[in-house]
Image 1 (cartoon, rainbow, N blue to C red):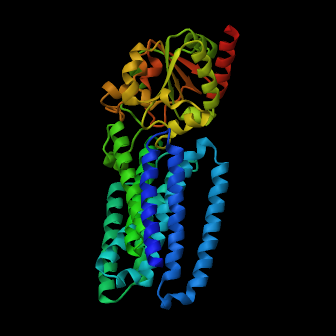
Image 2: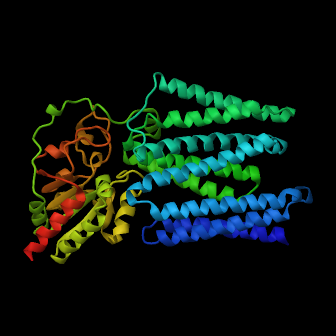
Length: 472
């Protein structure tokens, strides 16, 4: 009877995971989707406890100790997650996502290590042993790679670190890990398990994750985070087969497939294959001197930009990471409501890789209460820019650079961009004249119809609000 209950709970868990993920596809229903999937995870944990009490008698002698350890781990994990989730600032959300994703990969690697060191995986046959090795390899890469991504996003590691013969070193590490994994599987069949080799296998996998991520620049971090999310899901699914846990198999498969699709979509949005993100350096020298760009940067006052938008018919706003850094989303929406009260048609334009993680700008605007119906993706709004009286860019850079259309020597060449330069007038809110995260000079800043509003986005928005209110 208990086995029937466990299977029923796992089946319900699967339904909740899938339905929750479906609701996460829309900003309108995303919050409820997260809650539904969370309920599914709670049920999966309860089912795991039921399974623990239902195991054969031979395993009962350590049951009390195991349950106590699990409860302690759950308490520590829940407490830390609750505290950090409440404390984290919106600007720190990308690195928290990277960190949590790394923990998932690390958990899968830990399961693989336990099953391999104990010999349980090998005792269940070749297929289970292979899945344990693959899950351990992928999970370890996701763990160390995600930690490097977190360090880069959190400012603890700056720039890119590229070794001589980097790709050759990575290839040797990858092939070495696979060879060790194959030897571990073969050793299990023959009845002999080499503990030092298993440890070396995981060490090589962790080093591979580090070396895969250190050469990648910050502009590619959204794709990297999504890719490691897919890795984590795949590793969890493999370890679910090893433990014969349906909830892990389903959750891992759903996360892995969703992460893979998102990674491919974001890479497509940048017009770059995923292999180019991983194996090529993005940014740095764009093959041109600043003098090749015609025009000059023209400064403008925040009040002048605000008045121009106040008397416009249509305004398109492009948010970027600078908006998140300044925590200016609430002031921005306050300004938007003033424009709407005047009868101005206001819309937000979101590039797929704006910010530091997938959907970063959508989350930022949702936190400020911006209605979903005025937030549009690139493909839905790009044709509207020529009809816009004013387009304003807040902290974005590479995603609005016209060089992507025509400068073949630029590393962002071919990447779809938001057509800000086609608006009648463009304003760019920027703290200084520096280049973006990719290190590529932005031609938009020098365009005839572009003016630069220098300053922190929070302070600029306050000045714009004051200027508009003075008109009424």
